[in-house]
Length: 160
Image (cartoon, rainbow, N blue to C red; front, side):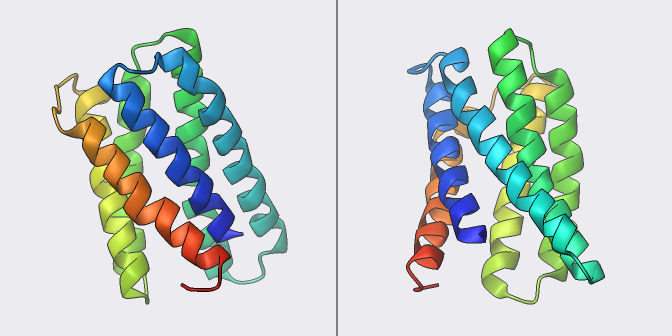
């Protein structure tokens, strides 16, 4: 299920990166954020129900960081909000992602968590602190393709 989630998270990051350039209205990206957020929510709720070990709960909680990010972003985009609350949530997620990176037993996943942490931190800077991050659109797209879409595709095709 992780490959499916990453595949669609990659798609939503690309769309969000394009939206940051101004080529897509934020409200037009809200639908995909809602769908991907709901997909991540469903996958990780199933993981919670099936969990039997602490690491299973930990894994599902990590997936829920993504789900709540996209659900919150969908609400911000749909309602035309400023997103300051989302920005501060992104700081919480960026810090949490560092823990996931540090506890990963797989170099690939550890690296992915570090990169995701950096992206969430930049969204904290942009939304929570209201600072312009000029490279954020391109960085969002690159993270989406390199750490989500491509790994998701490789997982789904058995090449991971």
